View 1 (cartoon, helix red, strand yellow):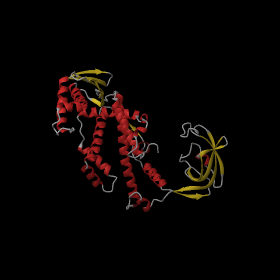
View 2 (view 1 turned 135 degrees about the vertical axis):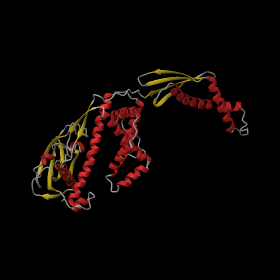
View 3 (view 1 turned 180 degrees about the vertical axis):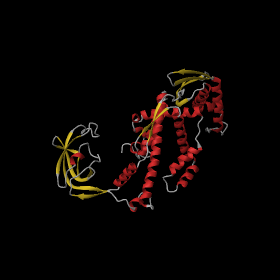
View 4 (view 1 turned 180 degrees about the horizontal axis):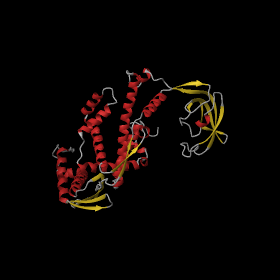
Length: 433
């Protein structure tokens, strides 16, 4: 076998592989003999078909079959011989296939990049830190009460946080437009569920009021025919309802799994959950900061084949998230939606792999147990959850992967210049809320 390697781009390689004619002929003859022993041809007993008949009937198809196998096998031998590390499936094309002559084919593919990993020495990483204050606990308890609030009719003027029952109809240039009408709609003022400015103009209204609400649709509004246009909504207020929070009593506590111990036990449970949430949020934010620094310090080119494969993974995840069904063709989801994320994921995966290899890291059993216990802590019978994970190799590998990832983060943090940045609980654990 003769092999030549051509570098066609930073990561693309083209192999030209030549197989001696006698090797091809020997393989074809052997395959024809095997064929002769098993084929059935009218007029001949099984296994007694003359070779010239077998060649005439099956020679072309057998040769094609043999050449396909030779291309696959010799491609593997060639990349091993040349010490290449293919990324993705090669494009293999025959070049010379004439009988009695050396068989020649090309294989074009991308290779994994050679990463010369740079340390994070001198790189700045901001690590968020936060503590849970009594005010944070009170605020979260108020949020929990609001989630289970009821609304009671009142004669007072509507305030932000109140609910108004309205009929409305929208007009543009005096003409009603499709989808702009509703009746008996319960709208919570301050919820931002309507277009900007709508809810603010209903503050101060009372039951029985009629009001024209003047707004403009955002430029990026989902309905292109309405985007950027000024509109008037004629509204009729039927009722104003004031939010009524549930009392802090045993019935309320029971909704959160606190069956005894009263308010002190409930507050302790809330704080415990907040601490777990904060720990996870801190870990995630720190990991993101470290990985961003790792990619900044180590810009690499990544194979298109790996990016394409990751795009398909993200498409599948999106299809599952939106319950599109097993038969849904993920190719219908535009690749551009995931291109940047896929490239980042592949880049990060290659770099994290290099950190693991360079430092000979393995999942630490103690850290695996710690992560398992954290995960199981939110269940009523934590030990059963731990036992389940440990008895399921696939589930356990996921936790081991998370532990190994955390060890990578810790290793990189030890190299970088770390600055602690103080955040509030809500900023870190509940961003955007």
